[in-house]
Amino acid sequence: MNLPRPVLLATGFAVVGVIALALQDVVVPLGAQFWGLLNNQIDLAVYQAGARSVTNGVSLYDVKMIEDLDYTYSPFSALLFTPLAWISFDLARPLWTAGIVVALYLVIMLSFRTLGRPVTWPLRVIALSLVAVAMLFEPVRTTIWYGQINVFLMLVILADLARPDGGRLKGFWTGVAAGIKLTPLIFAGYFLVQRNWRALAGVVGGFATTVLIGFVALPGDSWSYWTGKLFESDRVGSAQLRGNQSLRGMLANHLDTDTPPTLLWLAVVLAALAVGFAVATYAHRKGQELLAISIVGMTACVVSPMSWGHHWVWFIPILVIGIHLLLDVRRSRAPRVWAGVGVAALVLVAFSWPTHVPALIPDGYYTGLYVKTRITWLNWFTVSPYLWAYLGVLVATVVGLRMVGSRGTTPPSSDPIIPPGVAAAVIADGGLPTGAASGSGGEDRRRTDGAGQEPGSSASAGPSGQTPRRPVRGHEMADDLVGTDGEPVAETPDQGPAPTV
Image (cartoon, rainbow, N blue to C red; front, side, top):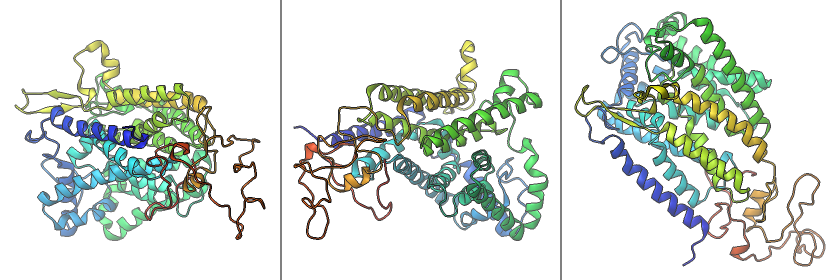
């Protein structure tokens, strides 16, 4: 039986998703005490302790939260966490974990939508399978394992910044995210470089709003945080910890010191900012906004003094971009092959490679490539693999955009191509007839009927002036994950009309 391509794709990805879920127990046994995926969530416990400190009138920064752990986020964040104070930790843990999984799914679907993919049932299956795959990435696994907030912040930023320039309050919610955890402030610098004053004002305005709310609700804690605690780096952790996947962590580990030279660190940080912003701006000008946002998000991890592995959740939109290119049958073979190579490389670098540490505890495990340092001649790479992955993304962006072109460029192919600017309309109208004219620039993008007449002419228009639909067979419809045999895509209640490809 010949199955339509979307059905085959959805089935294949479903199998991949099931295998990825099964691998969770192989990487680290789910039942491993403390080290199992759902047996820690200590950062969530700190969030809950901070929320209870706020509700009980206790200082956030003068007492320890859990064991010897400090509260390192802003006072505004503790206000947001206050609902956690009203429930038990045993209930908060599954709710928070489920929220991360849902947020992952929404990030992946939003990424596909930003890339121009219409929402169909095969795409939803693919997104669900990629959630399972993403959970094998060390940044995502440790986000779940620690009960971290990174995926939620990434979702807020993507939902805010993936909108067109000039959108109402664009940048504001990114500023709010920065008011919770400071790293999203890097987007203010990105918009400054672009001279996108409206989005810059949105980021600054959102951030200032959170600071103001913090001072109104918690004046003492706010003063303590913004004038002192913010700058006490020892509250976060040692720079030389292997999990510190930032430039400062790389310098500290290679130089074997907790205090790498400040001038050297600032020099490489400024270089990283310049290159990261330049490549992100290039992607933005080529119409690849998701790629630009992801590069800026990763740049924040690169230049931050302390970037734990779980900060690198920005690998997930990069994974989606690679899958999107790999599945785009309208493009020539070379870009798709390189996209597949990139996806494989990203999976290998970001995978939760386990390291059993029975000397520490019988069922103890570390995860991540950065703990694989026994092969000393490879330590130039394994000490800071995420920085090398970041460099790879920058190079692939520049080379790939020259190879593939911007979103508005029609790639050469013998298959029917939906011309830029009319993709959603053609799909909603029932598909693209074979032999339809396609092109860009000065080429004729108009559709004609069987008699060679243009829709809308006197010979083809109906009594109301509307163009009657010509019956199109399933095999004549463009197949780009739009549904089974070119299933028409209309507006969806939660997403609106499909965007232009």
